[in-house]
Length: 261
Length: 261
Image (tube, rainbow over all chains, first blue to last red; front, side):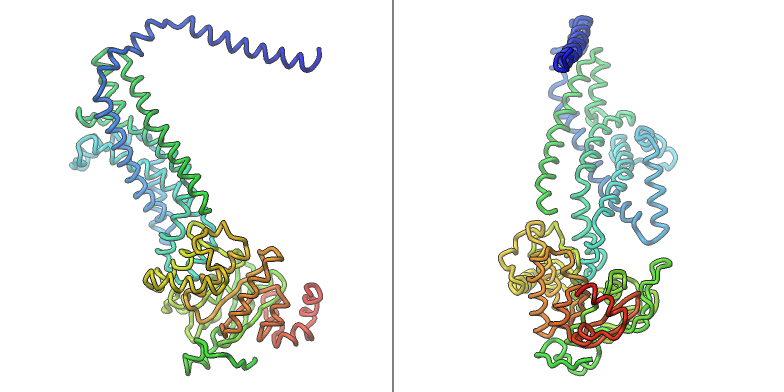
């Protein structure tokens, strides 16, 4: 057999297997049940407009709060971890290792239920507020390590140039090191942001007031009340509507920043 | 030591201070781990003097230069800049550094800032100059190195020779009393070396105090008031360029010059 014939034959077999698999799934699926349970137009219509005006809005708001909070706290932790003062390094390391080692779900649960009992203190904003504090704490541990890596990736000569011009270490960090560090870590930070969008779904464990519900909590409640899974599918689409433009935007930003490298 | 008659420069205007050497290093030792890089160096640069430091790589000449503005921490010995002991913890190091311009082998321009911003940043942050004044001084120094039209370019858009001239202009914008050059042309393509040396010659002619670590023997001969040959962490020989380069007394100097000339 000629090599070209054999190659054509192999490819033909691979296509045939793929077609058979697709055919099997399509034929064996019960399309009417799928439609009534997952793609029910009536149920989907019922979720509007609240799934946008309340649930999607809250998901975005929670993500922004958790990301901004996580960045500020993460920056502080990264600087502590690079500090020449030993106790600061210990503290930052302990914090980062602890909160990277715990599941976010447990931390959220802890802040919503354990902390109020143990410390006799209710975080502001009810259970949603407590859950958000937990999200900030968990995300800051990851972001701190990303920022530290970014700072360490800035060439030593940059700091030397700035210091040789008489700039103190604080101005050097703010005007020379951090701007370059954040350019370097834009891709991993985007990752953190996208993960955070999805981690807001864990807030359901905190048990939230009606107006505070985000996409996952909202659609789970709708699933229960309607005895139909369609709201979950709508919620899934909503997540994609939020995440996809965001990653595109960051990719664009990255290309723009290449200029100053 | 050569008494050089210089045009009125910063050095002369300080009056009685003119007697104090710009740089005076005594019994300087520097070790990296178990590696002894500087073994008790005595060295000075008078005000208005141009001293070229030559020697094989690993001889400690760059380390000596970097100890002068304390980018390297001396292990022992003293470093005096204009009579101020910079190894003293009471000394305001940032203030001393604004008076010592430094030019690096790898340029170390800030890649995220335009050329103009590279020149104004430390003026504003370390010298607390206003934006208008800093910009004016920056433009004047850019014109001086022949790059007035590159003010709005980013460093990555410039050739190596242009980047190094911007780095010189950046250091000059702080109105330093002296300039340190750490192998300023070693990272350049051969055809770009001339422009940078031309700028340095001009500076020397204006009476700038300069310490130049270099492999450019032609420059050392033409511009240097004194040449210092280092090897193995000690000063082996020093004197007028025509003596050290033309009629070396020590075997090690002869060996080195036979390889580079």
